[in-house]
Amino acid sequence: MKLAIISVTKNGAVLADKLAKNMGMPVDVYARMGREAGATVLRYDSLSRLIADIYLRYDGLVFIMAAGIVVRVLAPHVRDKRFDPAVVVLDEAGEHVISLLSGHIGGANELAKMIAEIIDARPVITTATDVMNKPAADLLAVRMGLEIEPFDKMKAINAAIANGERVAFAIDRDLVKRDHYVRLAGELGVERVVDLEELADSDSYDAAVLITDKEYSLEKPHVFLRPATLAVGIGCRLETDSEQIDSALEHACKRIGRSKRSIAIIGTARAKKDEVGLLAVVQQLGVPLEIFSNEDLEACIENYQLDTSMFVKAQIGVGNVCEPAALLGGQTDKLLLPKTIYGKTTVAIAEVKFR
Image (cartoon, rainbow, N blue to C red; front, side, top):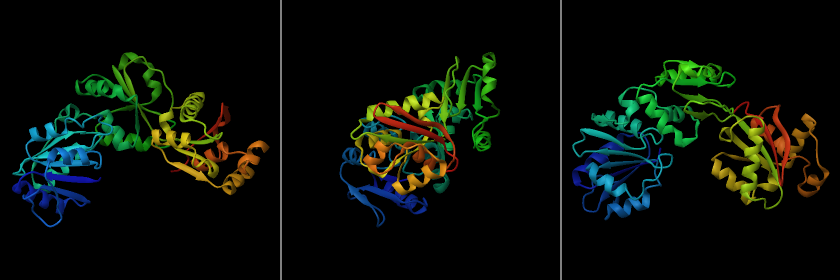
């Protein structure tokens, strides 16, 4: 976590210096000009200009000042809990540590508890599920490294959990890491985990949290937490735009009943490493792009006796891109979806065996 500690007074700067020395991680310390303490400090003259400059440069912002000041200075920059940094506020006496923004996804709640332990203060956590000592779905997602889908349903599900409604936590029994997810769910306060099949009895619950990479239809309010299980190989014509590639991915995943949010890695040939459309899709999904040499692709084609295209080989030097790229990306020997053509794009999908 990349952290900044910001103070406005001399006393606050002293506390910031003490905290920075004991955080056990790289920290940038900002102090108002003329009110510094300690040797390694960055000076500023306007708090509002400072925040405008650094708001998205850090994973966490720790303010040592009145909470009202922080609220006012942050207001123009707060956008979305998926992207806003964790924000924690301390009083100058170091008695209270308030988790103010991005408590779960940004990690502000955990950061507040960590700081409180370091300076022997009281953490102030106000998120409803934490206050009621109940497992928030977005916290499960963060701790398990899962993607939330659809994100706009998360608030309703967490409200149902906080209000004591019957929220079922279901984990796909086919997931390779199922036991790992069950263990983490228990550690985070989930009292009972069920299989997806048990959700057929809709009278037994009011809402549901589903951990699966599969498409699943449910009448009751629900949210999916998607594990990264899919390796996708992509081949495309020159200058294929991102909309066409994204649409191809969407259709390919639906064809095998999986979610696009479960893509763990995308692989392609070296000749496609600079394709703007492909790079845009990879950035949008937030997954790594693996570039394979023609030699690696050829070896995989020969090993698994994959079909090749003479036209493609004449163009880029290898006769099949998507299938060997999917197999190499997933470090597996089995395709869930063989080479499938969507306009100017070819897609193949494998299940990730080891990452």
